Length: 227
Image 1 (cartoon, rainbow, N blue to C red):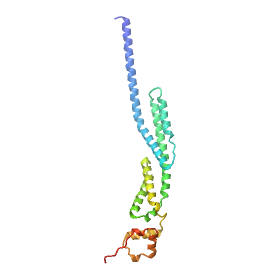
Image 2 (image 1 turned 180 degrees about the horizontal axis):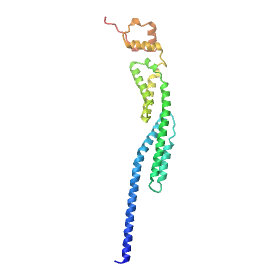
Image 3 (image 1 turned 90 degrees about the horizontal axis):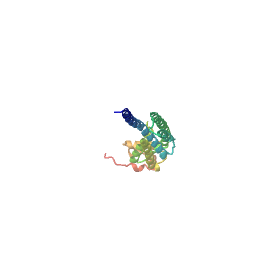
Image 4 (image 1 turned 180 degrees about the vertical axis):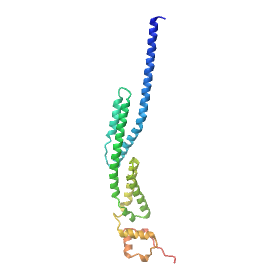
C-alpha cells in the first residue's frame, strides 16, 4: 500500500470521525434544548394562567392590569433563538423573566380583586334578606356567602372571579324589589314568628301593620289550636 493511499485513508477516517462528532454534538444540543423546554414549560403555563386571569378580571370588572411582561419575556427568548438553538443562559433568562412576571401580576390581581370585590360586598345589605320569602332568603344568603368566600380566596383565579360575579348578579336580581333596608323592629318580629308559638293575641295591630307594610304578611298563616 503506497504512502499516498495511507494518507488518503487517514484523512477519510478523520472526516468520518469529525462527522460522527458533529452529529453527536447536534444530538446533544437537541436533547439539551428539549430538557430546557420542559423546565420552562411549567413556568410558561403559570404565566399564561395569570395572564388569562387578568383578562377575565378586565372583562368582568373593568379593571385593567399591565400584562406586557408576558410578551416581553417570550420575545426575549425568541430573539436569542435566531440563528440556531438557544443557549442555556437564554432559557434561564426567559424562565426568570416569566417567573418575575407571574409573581408581580399575581400580586397585582390579588390587590385589585380584593379591593373591588370588598366594595361590591359592602353594597349589599344583608338586612334586606329578612324581607324576602323563606326560599328566596335562603338563596340570597347562599349567594352572599359565595361572594364572601370567593372574595377572600388566598389564590385568585378566573373561576373565583366568574363565580363571584355570577353570584352577585343573581343576588341583585333577587333584591330588586326588596326594601333598601329593614327596620330593626321588623327583624325582631320576623324572628319571633319564625321561632313559633306566637298566638294572634300576642300580635299587636302595629305588628300586623308592619308585616303588611313590607309585604311579609303573605309568608305567615294563622291556624286554630287543637285545644
